[in-house]
Length: 78
Image (tube, rainbow, N blue to C red):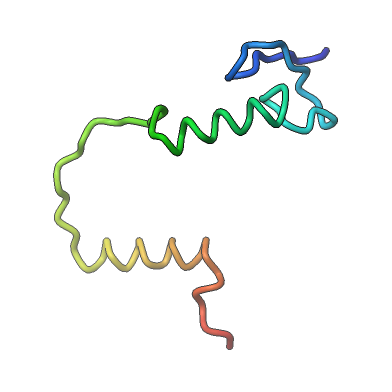
């Protein structure tokens, strides 16, 4: 089964396959138009503003450990 999606910029049908170099866009032009819209802040990912959370030492240690686990370049070589 072939998956077809609409280009987010021009709505032209795009076949979702490895050969579709600019998927989900139909062309480099549509891809650049979209990135320009993000740069101009025409697109935004919004979420409700969350109240401040008081962090304790244990929470900070857990956040630091998670960050270091996913960002190995910050870890000193052994």
